[in-house]
Image (cartoon, rainbow, N blue to C red):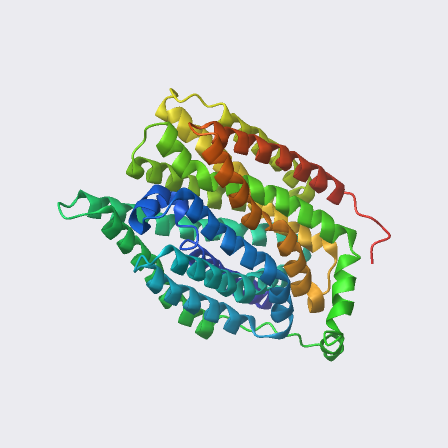
Length: 418
């Protein structure tokens, strides 16, 4: 009994460390979620140029996801995570100088390598190995919800700093934004050595499994590609992630079309971030109690409907209606995020190729990171006045329904799978 308690405590303490790392590493990359117009002003770039930076980030992610899975199967995850945090922080120092657009493309590309190649698959695999078969939902729910809690705490402090600097007589938007960047960089440079010192290495102990992991890459890849569940899991993630990614545009949409100030919009989007720990963790536990795939299917339908409602929200709506809808969308999309990786537990993928499977699913599932900015940018330019946003939200909502069907199919396993 004491041994089991000790093992459980160790698992959750390791999970907490991974959660902190995951929560610290991504906010800089997606700073536009809360400060999009402030970034455009401070860096003197256009909305299209910022979306091209995001597209560059997404392209690097797509290219590196499969190699990141290969790395996660063969190298120390502790070292990979620590290196990623350090590199992201150092690039953040360069970012804080508010360099030219060309330099921004380089920074976003390098961020893609630091967080996609060496971090992504390693941290997902660690969580999948930490959790028992009946704990996949809650562990991944805690991962995404906990990561969201870390991000929400940091964002709350960031918005407070931003508002404080702007309130000073000498405060400017660029100066306030620079202080926000310093905050995130400082956290990254502190967490990096903590991960290196405190996170355990989860090396395979079985000699037979270690021998099997040395198979040629193509054999491992074909093993992954033959599995029906892998493709369905990827479909759930690609559709679910699009729903979540669309929420990044809420900041600019509300500020441009509803007459809200930068501080007001930042406050609303930060409030949405607080839905992440609630939605992600609750969905994870409900998924373990019921059925992860069926719960995911229901959440995808509800998230699609709620996002489509954003397209029809009148510009004369009361502020509380805007806030309520944004929070509802946040709750549902974060619930989707908290559950879609839990479906990996039902794919019966052995640990020796689990990283590669994660990389393959991620390459497909997070492909929207690359193409959605390329779709949204021309839409917003060609259809100004909020119409472009509405078309964008309706397209994404329709895609979410396809994901719901994929989750439904995933709940009915194919007995012929390997």
